[in-house]
Length: 447
Image (cartoon, rainbow, N blue to C red):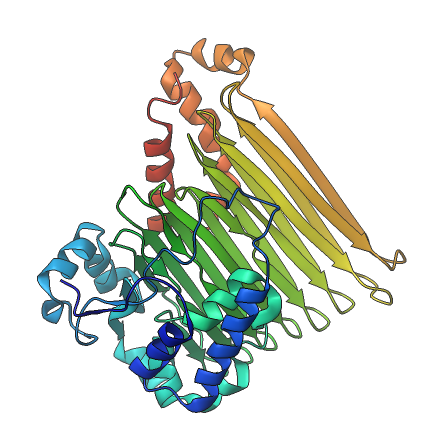
């Protein structure tokens, strides 16, 4: 089905081939090759999840699924379209979304933004198209929040990125329906490295939703995305992820936002699939009045390690942050919270709340927490951290069952109550999807 595929492995020729395929300007080719050198110079991380079975030189770095990108579902090749139809993407686009993007392997095969938002100056396209048609924006913001030397996998993405999304929201424009991007890995030993850049100008607002999935193969695949958000003054940006990769995918993602004066940035993060996940959405509160929020849920089952968390840097006074992290471990799975709240010297009147709650469903599962709070300026700052680890208690079940509720329903009620803070923040359709995934994950795990 693929129209073009590079040889397996990673070297300068592969990186240059990816750049040449997209007819990129020389500065981007040079950026990629420099990033490859950084990737090769950095050691594999030895903290977080176990990466000893991941061989980055034994995967395909670029697979092009079709000759071109489409703006009508009817034009998308049947073999690809059927996958997205089963996921309900075309149906959702008609009534619930302002725009949709769908990436299959290395390239976006479908992208469409409703005319109402095109007329208001909103840009929603893949990153290669943005580089071609809006180079000035890309050159101004690309890699300014997450440079290639940030970490080994940010360097890898910087070298081999393809696809992803570019979103530009003009000053004062409020997009009232979400933009959704869907990412699908369909080939074994495939690497997907989408690059996403969202720019919200002053007083604008946007909600971007991404979904991820892949079938199960006998060999591992790698997903290593980079997401950068620029939230200018008084803008509001919400980035929601519902990650449901298959359990043979390494999910190693770097996401970071900068919030300027009175801007509000939210990361809503649901992690259900993958073999190993390392993801810590970050917000830099750059100017007074900026507000950041990270709300995450991780579900770790057999063979899975979800190492997730959040980072918030308060760089200015009168800034606020909230971190709520929920995790469920079952069937021997392991979940870890890894977080950082930092208030540098001289920053006052900052307020931060961190709450980490872990629910362990059996004796073979595990949950860890690695919270870090660095406060260099103690005057007039209000910092709080709470953490809890719990199991479902017999007296909780007894209380509910004594009121005529079955054991299975009582367990489901307790779990739904546990995840409610995250679900309540989602639009109805995505809350239903989260609840469906939770129900699917818990089948056979409880009761």
